[in-house]
Length: 445
Image (cartoon, rainbow, N blue to C red; front, side):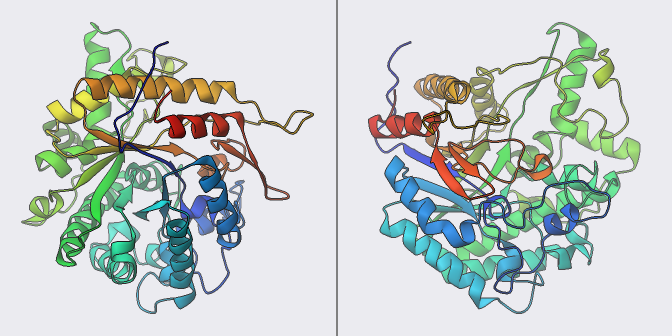
């Protein structure tokens, strides 16, 4: 293995999300989110985000930990229902105060604050009014964004309008995520309205003239490949998945304008075409300062594999016929962003990481997670190669700083470079955290 040095000024960070780490679900005036409601539904046997990592009370400890590791930037998210408990209307001062303390503490410790405006946790009060399926959401979201920009506009280096908007599809069409609905027609309208929220938020952001801040969006790319590269049915299936149930749903309207032919044909066939008003696609396609890429793995499709035979709408979500990690897919994805979607803005890897089930301390209290180090190292090698070939990537945010509430997987899946004992809230840096700390200090490995 060679030496991999990254360019001077390359940004090394870690990432979390409010619903996954904050806890304090009902404290200091916070309203419920759709995830609070979903996890407490009768018959839904899920862990809850009520306490999570208790970062609401322990943020100083977590920031001290980041400083010790040398982390240069922290990507966190604002909890909409902590700031506007009903989604609109009365602002909760205690919520604003919390984020002011968090951001102030990051800055005092030399860590750049980067914030996601929306990371899947819609206020439950707004879901009761139709959530993203109600076009009024554009107005509600802008009200929320306006509060954030007025209070924290120049304090945040990178603003991200939405994280992985595909969660809306998974939660509204497939029922796996909050709010747990299975209505694809409604989900398609939700996606369209979410994209409008994004476009209008970018316009609002520009009106604030914030010299130190930049705005973008984070879309995860799990690229589907045909398992048999020369098999027509596999090729068709992979293309269909990318365009109708994957990143194409978002990247096409964001960067090329409109929905792709494949997606339009699919929505027409099933009667899922959302209500689109004149000017919508111009609003959605706003010039951005950067693009956030969440990269985890590739997916391989095989048309005659029984696991993938369900051709009903929503039938094939993220099932790969191959096990293991395909690191080289990262180079493919970065090439595709440039060639297919004509991206000519800087890219940040806003998430990448490795899940494990449990990593108990050994007799010395140390936690060995060699598979995570191996995974991150391989991703960084591919990233380095892509950058040598001209990919304009400016930073990498490892998911995650802490083991946390992993949505429907609850606390059974651990992504952290720091182990959290959820009974005691004790934090223990894993081997991967120590390794990542070295990478940051050396700007490579």
